[in-house]
Amino acid sequence: MSIWRKEANAMKVGIIGTGFIADVHAEILLGLGHMVSIVIGSNLKSAEEFAARWNIPCFSSNLEDLDTTNIDAVHICTPPALHFSETMKCLGFGKHVVCEKPLCLDPAEALEICKVSQEKKLAVGVNYNVRYHSLLADARKIIKSSDFGEIFLVHGSYLQEFHALPDAYSWRYQSGLSGNMRAVTEIGSHMIDLIRFLTDLEITAVSASFGYAGKNRRLENGLMYPAMKDEAGDVVVTTEDAAIVSLKFNNGSIGNVVLSEVSHGRSNCMSIDITGTKQSVWWNSEAPFQLHRAQKGIGIQTQSDAFGNSFSDTIKACIKSFYNNLSGGTLPEAVRYPTSIDGYRNVAVCHAIFCSATNDSRWATVDYENL
Image 1: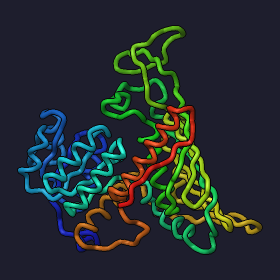
Image 2: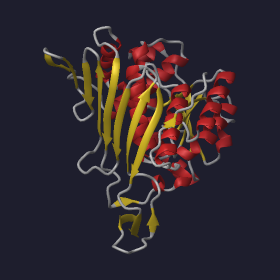
Image 3: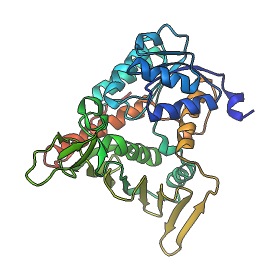
Image 4: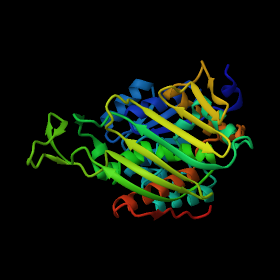
């Protein structure tokens, strides 16, 4: 029996959503010894098929059925625009919540989630799984050590090719489900969380520019293609394919990140480089089992972990830490799960990025309320 099974009592859990990421959550929950008791789908057919696939006893398309089911927590695996209403509903039912990123789309709504969860003494976690790559805990220790010095520069990039054309016209391009951003909230939010996790710094101001790989697109058999010259196109894409964001931090340091969902050949390339007054540390998701550090005149030192973790491993670690907390267990600070407060601060940064990008890249202050 695993250490996890010994530390935590099995929980009864519900899942909202029936897509790819919901399958990942179901597999991990069952593997950790929890019971998935009910799934809620956007329609009854998708819920029934999901329930059959994972041997879940109850399925429904009605959120109210979560209230009548004897469950402890709910995993929200739906598009971002639904997160606020579904999270608030679950908190109203007295359920703990694990929410896919982002927590929601509006800072005021994220703040409300924080306050309600605190009032009801219910846990809310956000699946910022990237921080659970094994070597990033070591990177955090290095950065926090006196040997590293004061942080004064943070830069990185997150590049993917998934939305390069041709691409399926999915909910991700529909603002009613995805919100008014795409690259920033989908992949940029991971970068924001990782920066905060590694450095313990807060982003106080941003200057951002958005890029588009053609807003007008023609639609054929559910796939989008570039519109011909002077062609109006069947679909107008309003959310960004790429973004460049400059950052200011609460310790006076500066930073910059490049985000792209249309970078050919990059399936999932996230890189981060943090420079202190004495050392630098950098890591790249395409070589996730290596962590690099350097000091002037000494050269580069590379630390390897031959038994590092995969994408699903990092989500498993995030979910595991959430339930370990519920069961009264403890984990090192370096692997604490992302809370609703982390989610709120992330939403606030994303909101400021949008304000800047839609205002000629003028600097926008990130407003936080203390919690």
